[in-house]
Length: 197
Image (tube, rainbow, N blue to C red; front, side, top):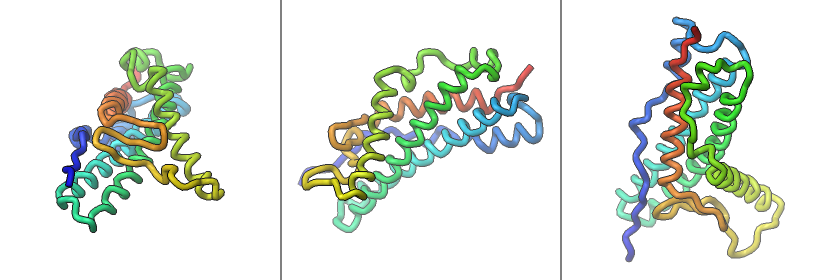
């Protein structure tokens, strides 16, 4: 029997920031004074936390599966992990949309925009297309299954493979996903601690 391995970076050191953002907002008043900008900031930080939690939950389920020595009764852990990664991909798409909006919104201070890194790989054309295509594939698959349009041999859900995630002809590497999560978390840290002057 072939040993199953996953090349899945551990991102558990990327801490949650929503509580820091909310604490600072209510007790020290930091963040944007404009309500539209605040709404963008708050939802961006919140979604990054959800994104990281879904990734780590998926990773932990796969690690639990490997620790169970691939016993037949532990295969449900792979299915559960797949669900966490589906949520991760959908949330990543939302996060990248918020990030683009923050960078281009006229009511977000230029000083904050200048603090955000330029040339983020999560926002380059190839990455955006991959994230969007995978998110759409997840959503369209559900519609096709519910409408009875699925045929034998077609993918039924997102699949975890050694180095990434697959759904039909779409593939996302864990190394890319981890890099994007680190980038959006770095931006979240800047946004959560931003103080208007």
